[in-house]
Image (cartoon, rainbow over all chains, first blue to last red):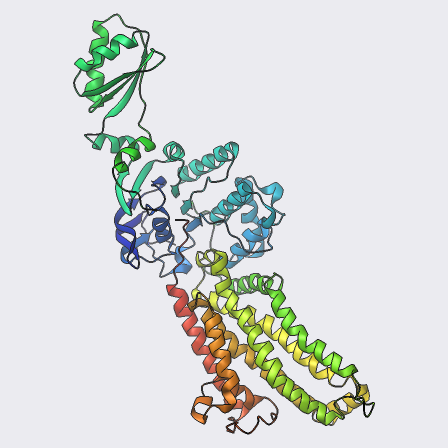
Length: 316
Length: 283
């Protein structure tokens, strides 16, 4: 049961540990889909995730998850799954026992708990080792059993702190598919990762954090569009690359043109991609150049992030 | 999403959750390496009394305690000084403090805190698990130690004392004292486990207070657990010339007082649990 609200609402939230800032004045509304949290160590990602999960209480501000708060844990935590960054488990339990035990704490009878545990183990591809003790699991298996625990009660909100850590490429791909599937089903998935291209790959929107502040939020391209002074890098691949490199400076908003060592690629930085593309198309029509590819190269989360926080000191 | 139907309408939901928590916690307190210290402490009096039972008095060639009345007196000393003052106290401290503190240190408490379970049920589940484990363990040790008194005197003496002598009543009172010690100390230590990062200091203060109980003035005696436990246990041995003698209240009042203390400690535990914060970050 929720309160007819389908969003995670974070209003004016600050968290201080004594005099140390965790996060400050965070306002966010998270709708269903995958939201990536990006920031360096100490930027406030884990603090924000712990606040959303209700493990921390804001010093100021309010957090509402689907209309519920952590004052009603018996209702709220039906809808939240949390995968902590820390790698710790109750001792002497097999993977299956671990899931079943905590599903029983949720209140499920033995049969339902066993069924839900089996389903979650299947989804994270851990069935084969489900009856082995977690103490003997590899790092990747421990990561997957944590994920299974966070999704086994089929929550609508999943808070996943570095969920892809320790996974091999194959497992990463499987888990990313799982996130996409869950998001398609209407879940809110908050993912933090230090592997930025993964966040870029899976997130519908990203939240950039730096020194406890949200410095930007939205979809990556949208954010980039809003950053008027952020030069966008565009790659032009052509046999005529050296000539193009010399001529693109005639176009408006170009701030840099760099010829690659292979002399087939030019990297152009422009302050206005739309105007550049219009003008460059005209230039192509006026010259006998064969253009093989034109593509933005830094519309990644990493590039935007670097731009946003490059000048800010990073607290550890 | 959320195809799962939560058993909210189940009137026994709280009981299912309580049982699950007790099951997890019993496994944790009885079958992990942390339990080793408790088993060692529990084994000491059994080994001691078994050894004493086999030692003969070199002068008389009979039992070292002389007769069963002396043996009972010796047991009263051992019970008050070691079983209650050390085994039950330190055992309960180790067991109940680890229920929350152990999980905070292991970083696994969030699995409970992120479950849709009322904090009252979580506290009750952990407390009851501790209680079952401590009463089961220390109650058994109390029983076995009392029966070991009869090792040098034979089964016939034991049967006679239990059927027509004071043994049945004494044993019942010792067991009741152990049970109420677990109840009272357990609730206090459960609470301390939520408040202190390093619980050694409060344990030392508390054990010092309880051990000094016999020299405390009457007004201060009343705020120690052992004062009320003495009201339940059989008549105690003499405490020496500096002891401040004060009769304990009747057993029923003592049980009520210890139940009251337990209730207060558990309420504080729940209040603390509702406000507890866990900070999981590697930065």
